[in-house]
Image 1 (cartoon, each protein chain N blue to C red):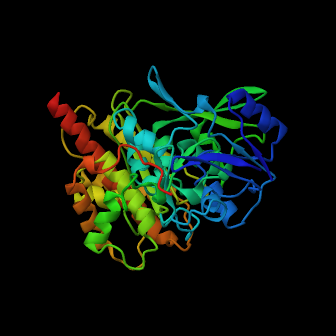
Image 2 (cartoon, one colour):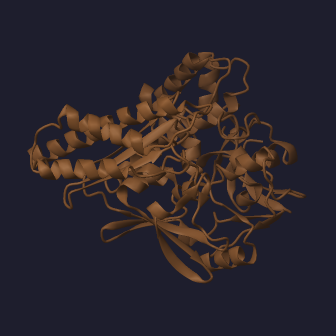
Length: 292
Length: 166
């Protein structure tokens, strides 16, 4: 096995071009498990932890650009106001030790359907900035996940950053697991409200081959909020709207039975999470209106 | 390959390191520092917790090569010069927070990190901070007692920086 340790981004891209089979490793929280248990043994590992360009996050107008080295701890410390959905999801990742090392970009690299960062990134309409020696490109988050642990990266590409719109309104995330920490989600759900452009975003985790949006649920709720003039009001959402939203979210999933839960349980739990997180967001929006 | 790093304040070298090897293996098997324990090898149990450049990490999830040139502090390095034990270790002993002892080193490092960040944590903060450290003896109540005891001694009780122990 070869250990490749670039110290600049251009060296990293050249190394990936020269060794397309190399596994990129940053925090190592996924890669080391594979190595420790000898599940797979790559010909080379490409250590990105010394590439300074990947570390900081920056604000660019109405976006936050999360460098690929941004850890969950970085998000929790710096971004609760700008990216509240991703912050809630980051808080539920592993333990302090894992959050200190694991990166949001690593979640995308692994592309496990259960990754906690995926649902809020889907709900916010994030973009993935990838690069190779051939040049950079941007991939819409909807087009990034191709299958179980498969993503849209070409063999010579690395994730440079993730561009996430600054939250224009309330965002929430919830997941089901056996504990409040250290769990891989049985299923998870994120919702984001954009009262400025009057849009609703969603993201489902761990209940389909890939993380995915609940597009029909988004369309239904957007139409309902517009049609009844609810965006302007300060009233609660009625039970029928919440139930229908939950049912459409559950219908968008394509879960399986596995060791963590059954497909039927996942669908039911998703409808509950959808109603619950939407209620939290809506109450937050009402409170902001009343305060204004 | 050769890995050169600082461990508990001293420059150390390890030769013949396999490229896929963890920092934990280097510490225990090559540098004779068995304080960090090897159990789950997947970041679930926290018994291998160490500081890497001042950040609490699971040593089993750090590639040895990623520690090249970095600063590592293990449980062996937490006490100040001239002291037998660190304040957190003292508190664990006094509170009876040690049963079989296997999880203790990882917990001691995690508690040291917690008290540096939050000198007087609430119970909820303690539980959250230690969520990644498992005690199979299930002696969690005494461990919580130990954290509360250590926190009453104030942030001044901890050395300003973790120092060389061995």
